[in-house]
Length: 421
Image 1 (tube, rainbow, N blue to C red):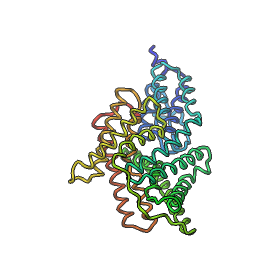
Image 2: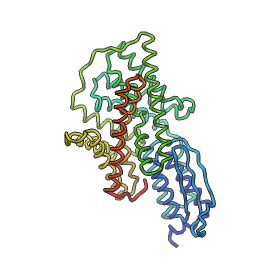
Image 3: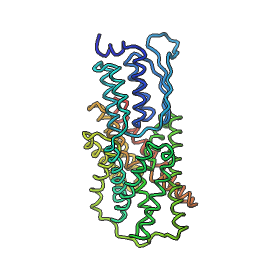
Image 4: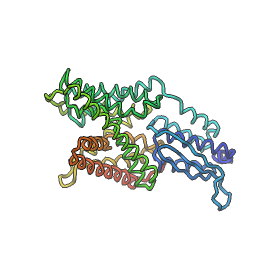
């Protein structure tokens, strides 16, 4: 009997325990519903198990039956797993994928594989948490320079506020009550901090600084994943994720409006003097710093940092070039479509030939393409009762989401995926 065949002959409960733990880890590390369901069902088939998987942002339901039990199609075991929404962790996602491959191939016992998967759930070290805090500051500063073309003062203040928001986010991971309101608190702190600095230290472009500082919390990735799930007929998961993203936008907008009104009530008004913008050559150092920040933010293994940086550069350059390609085509949507197309194809090639999850290329690559900031501005305009700008921004948000998702889908057609992740 082959090594892979021995894995399929393990006790039924052992195989189920391994598959349930695999599903738990994939969900925890930010895998979307279609890819999670495909990955777990494929692993189950190789272990001689029929698995019907249903995944949502907050739960997984899996029904198991051994192959060869006739055509009744009745499940022997159904497992319900209640989970918090996952967060992208590329290093642990790659580890979980490697453990699954080794266990299915028979190089690793299923019990040992289960133990290794369970160990992946260990809490993050203080060093890793410090890295996450730093990535918030780097991401905020790079966005302020790269997209908003703000002044040096805006860049430094956005980076400093980003660090504070990173601390709030890390603290909320182990404090459920703080986690429920962390987005609103972060937005309030960011807006109040920017207004105070602008009023008493140096004039700032308040909206640009606040948007840059909050960029990591703006749910652009969630909105994109939701549309991808809806387009693949995973309607429950897609609509639930969309609802969560909208709730996050509302909390962020409430925090910014509340801070603005609070400062106005105390007679604190930001300075209005406009400082000179950053030089154009700052785009490239800012892009490199942002790419490194995203590598840390997504908890990427050091061996994959170069891949992440390359993916971020490809996504940015493709979008920028596509936007300038033709005046006859709406620049931003076509550029986003082109970036999604290239990144989708590159992620599938990376997964096919290096036998690692394509998410290492796909997730960091599209981070600069997702239109979360447009959604934040749309809700902010509506809160300010500027319905015209609010609706214009909302239409642009929908257009960009459709363009990005269409690009990723066409990328899958251009290079067919051979691996679920």
